[in-house]
Image 1 (tube, one colour):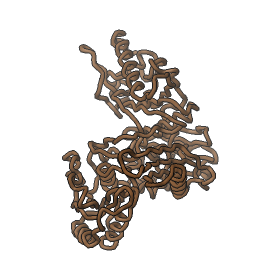
Image 2 (tube, helix red, strand yellow):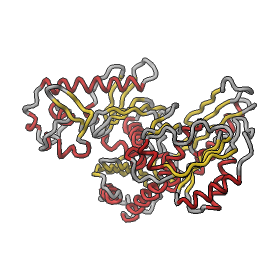
Image 3 (cartoon, helix red, strand yellow):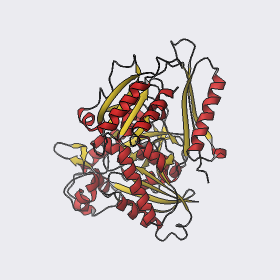
Image 4 (cartoon, helix red, strand yellow):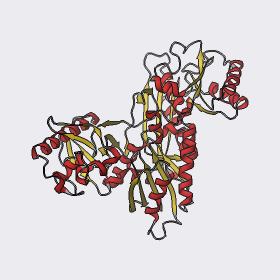
Length: 511
């Protein structure tokens, strides 16, 4: 059973052809401005010379940073009409209130606050304002805005107001794409609304990006289905990615973590993914990335939806090293490493040059570094060790030593010993661990609910059944599904002892 995994980063496009857990071919190529060319180049390499691979490639899994980069760089975003349902409550903080000014200008469309919504126990706050929603839909149609975000109070528990609002908008303005917050976020209103707005702002870019991937795959002669990797280490169909591009945020680090699991055989470990500019650290639990349980900042916007617990620092192969006075980073030569590094004929001393000088990697002409003082490289080695030790310590939740898996093109920079680390594991194919993680991805289903007056066991059983149904609908084989984690938390200080339950399941692709 063969799969192709591709990770399209800002600098490189990595690809692997995977047969079960065996890597048949791999490649790291420069990412191109038009996306399609870079993906075609990567596919041409992993398919070339692989006898019999082309006919029986089961699927192509792609991870991409395009959507995250679009938010960070404020490009390719659509204006969004924002509809919040919750009056007479939920009006003290208006939508988009704490967004960075430049992102606000790029995204903000007309805003509507309507009566409706529910309490946590299902009681209506007030009747949904259907006539107000119809007037809002007409205004959106006439404004020329092509995307809308609908958020209602406690809609992850009862989504009736959101679905009714979406139906009215589809009737009046059928060309407007819509995101319902109940499909994305958790209970908090503002953070869930922010994630919903970002998702709608990315709809146009998501359609273009997925179309480019499909074109590259078709021109390569492949017929297998296309999946995009999500930020929980699993995949979703390309059609779903067009609807929910924010679920691809941070999928690059999660792909690397999943790849580190396959390449090392370790299911519980800290992963250090060392790239050209940064090192991303994450925690593997049972072979999957640990999820963040707090709000996550994306491009200056507070959100609260499913995201991996990842911390990044400015340390990579392209990080610039200076002497007199000694300083490292945070700036980097990035994708121009092979052009700018001294070992390859450039004029900039980088951490890759330090690695060559220390004998950690063979690259270019080491003789070009003969004038680099030993004291400088020793100081850089100490700085790297301290920086990574601090990063490992931030990821740990207990005092015990844990294994560390080093992946990424700059994995050679990770010392063989670090304080608080039982062993540092360096694996073959570390440079394409992100593509390996994409190729091996499974399918997940998640459900979060709050129960009022329901015992713990039935509440968990009902949530588990819903999570399984979500996974099967996403393309998972029902018999392969297993529970990844279960959280049940009593909600204090609220009458009736409500219980919050979250369940996540994972399984293999069906068919």
